[in-house]
Length: 393
Length: 155
Image (cartoon, rainbow over all chains, first blue to last red; front, top):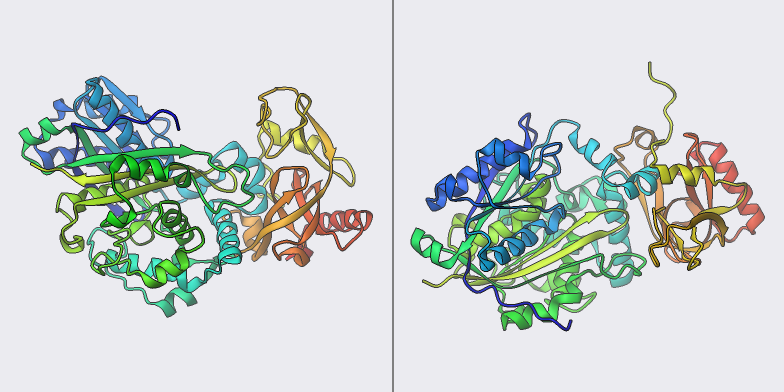
């Protein structure tokens, strides 16, 4: 890459907020997005009229969109963005908003990912997800992501010797984290290895506890200036570096790496840090194998070494290894549609602002958040990542 | 009021072109007239040179199974009734990676297969992978038999 991105100086991330997830809901997506906006504003003491930018991600919002939400919510923004990048959306919304704030185009941007979940809504979403899905996946029984990820999982197991126990270590540690996060759908449900291994198969080597639970909910945060965060006297987080990369390695016959491998070196160089400096890692976790691709792609271990890495490294928030998906991730909190692309970032912001309560990573100052999303055919197309640091007064 | 359950029949306009291109005993895929790229799933323009000059042609049907999966739960009722359902990804020698129905004997990664485009009981085109241990003409017969038997033998 010949051009290097400028630093994100002067940009503050504040007010991480989650509307508690619900298994199903009759409410519209705008309820979850709107209640998130209200919660964020209340947390940081901003008036609604101060919001001059809005970025949203939502699968169930159509036929409404970010512009119709302005009327719905009574906002008069001068900057709008809608990010349809699934699990990469949170970091991408943050990055776009940060640059606009830095350039002075806007001062207070609310970034929200949220969806509702009606009965039968998930089937409607996946059966008509994209043109490639309709023509080339659905006719083979591959509705929804399970089939595609079962092929990615099988290929990874064949080539790198991963076992179901290895995937189970990721699922179990996340469940432990969720048992310390009261808003998780699985807050009160424990998971042990025998239960994980004996769970019914869903698709190939993907069994029940490798899959996320579709649900309703929303996550959000506000991007503004450090100056404004100081005025509000709220803790903030700064962006040391971030990157996105899409449709990486299109010639790989099965996905075993992603855009992280493209931008990893530049990401760490811009932050002046390395993987060993990260006090937590939030990965996009629809299916544990994808967590492994992110651990490898982001340099926490070599390609193909993630099974050994998760055997040797405690992944719980208090395990003193690499705290991973500290709120429980989508596997144990739930997948509230587009909120899944914000959940890891929002919990990362809670960690770095000391608001994670029961699941707080002790002394968290810096961490990495990764995104991945949008299976159009046989693989996720979007990747993103950011290195974040607690703001210093 | 419900008719006979069939495999999923919904296709885009380009998917319908694939059905229209089905010809006996062959694999018909979208080819670029400008740069000769063979591509799948079907697109409006060439993924390589962006030409809009695309034609459906018989291509070399040889490929290799990359990964397979038995689907134990499917959101589509036709598959759910027949679960577990075998499908997988096949890297074609002519370029594209395709998802396809797999005959039971080719679930191992690395299995050499022939892939054919045929109409299933919904009347729409699907791809089926048959072992290369059968000669091409025998594989063609088996693929046609599997389709005519409503793909029942495949699981």
